[in-house]
Amino acid sequence: MDQIDLFTLQQTYNQQRIMLCFNGPLTRSLIEEIGNALRNYMEREHATPSSAMDVFGAYIELTQNIRHYAASKGWHDSEASATVVIARDAEGRYLVSAGNVVSAEDGQALVERIGALAALDKTQLKARYKEQLRKPRDPDSGSGAGLGLIDLARKATAPLICSLKTLDDGRGFFSLRVVM
Image 1 (cartoon, rainbow, N blue to C red):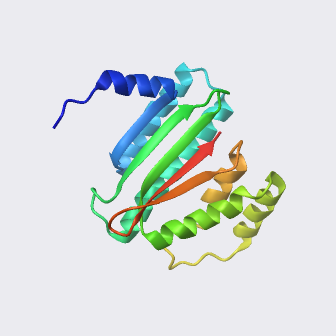
Image 2: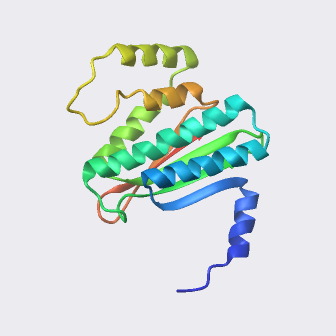
């Protein structure tokens, strides 16, 4: 393996204002440890408590969704890996991004769902959230009530942005960015 150019990597991270980056399999304990590191970092940056909670909440929602998805597919660690990046943009907003391998069908459904959420304004998102709260939950679905993405869209300061890149094996790499 070639030597990794850490200086260039550091320069890239600094230019893109990346505060935290992780690439690999997500375990419950690892999600917790990275979450603790994120909280500590935001405290040192003197982030407002509401900003810190929003960023932490987005991080937890995205990473737990990835972990639960991989478990629902019965995937091993190598297939269940994720890339998570927390950064700041030029305006000082926090960017919480996460990506993972998904089935092509699931990825396309997510792209459509997020596209629909991105087209809604705050009032419409609030109504969608309340509507979803009232829906009966399917106990056999194995997933949550479907509120997580809607809540992320409600708390975000810009529309959710996602992408789906087709992989050679027919699956896709799904990425989602939340601006807080």
